[in-house]
Amino acid sequence: MRQPISFHSEGVKLDGDLFLPDDLKPGEKRAGVVLCHGYTGVKDLYLPDNAAELNRIGYVVLTFDYKGWGKSEGSRSRLAPFSRVADVQAAITFLGLQPQCDKSRIGIYGTSYGCATVVFTAAIDERVKCTVGVVGMGHGGRWMRSVRRPDEWVDLLERSEKDREARVLTGQSEFVAREEILLPDRQSAGLAAKARAGNPNAVGKIPLEYIDETLSFHPEWVVDKISPRPLLLIAGGDDRLVPPEDCRSLFDKALEPKKLVVLPGVGHYEVYLKPAFDDVMRETNAWFRQHMPAR
Image (cartoon, rainbow, N blue to C red; front, side, top):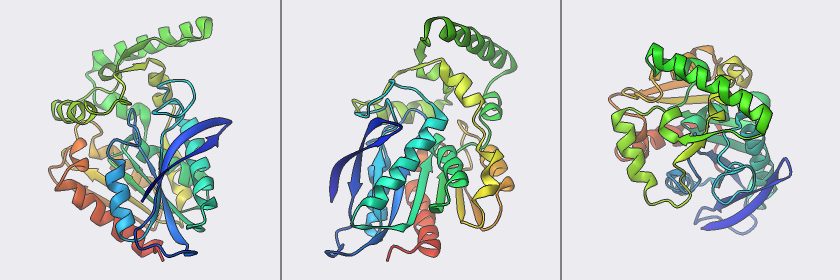
């Protein structure tokens, strides 16, 4: 039961979908979950599969596109990490207004860069009762440096500085191939290209402004503020795009109750495909059921 919806964040209209469980009775309220996509993802890429699984065990689910992504309004293809946090908070408010949702029981789930987004959101918004983050990073600068050779890192910082200066003078950031900033390993490049090929909202170019915005976003600085609300983190043991060490650092700085699951031999984009997808959702469903039952 998928319903198209829209709501506003910081005055900008966002596009989304509300997913309702098949067994929902008239007048009944269930716990809700907001799903958040990653770096250059969109709500129709991967997340409907997560929504179906959460619907199956009884949750009301909301997906949406951040400002400037998919059919949402706003400056196109921006990362804007702190604005994304505001979008998630608006999504929580909107979900809580739905007659099928108990606004006192709302959780959030984020994948890849969405993991960093939901961690930051949960840390500053006590309305979040349960959080799950998958294959995400804890420190933007450390992550970007960890997947590059030293000379590539220096080149990246130089490009960022030039673009920063140009943005001040012209108001514009240079658009470059997505892969120049989100440096993919071979496996990630192949799987991502295959998944994105059939999605008209997937983009191939993003602004160099992404560099500065990533270098300034460090959810591990605030992750301890989530406690005493529960946090589950899931990492891919063979993730070469966002190495599991970065997710472990995020976990180490979090306080209880918390859990870290490392899926052996699983790469970044494999978490969206069976059999790893089933492992991700088994852990996710169990965490939500334990800490925020649907009924």
